[in-house]
Length: 79
Image (cartoon, rainbow, N blue to C red; front, side, top):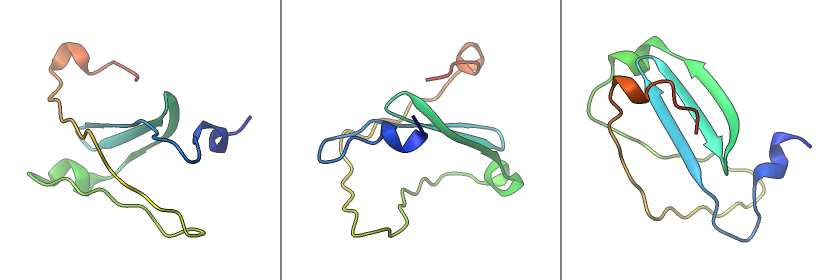
């Protein structure tokens, strides 16, 4: 089963995003999707943007958005 199987079509999905320094890691319904590092992310301050790229008429809605600042004891957590 590939990562595409993590998406639940026609229902709400849980997307988790962890940003630590220059590294962003995402999980979809508990499955790690991608982790990447970008110096510009580490230099950024104060903004969060949610985006999806167009693909086959996908409709995206966001709800229950929660932000949590992680302290040093939480940095090794993998959601």
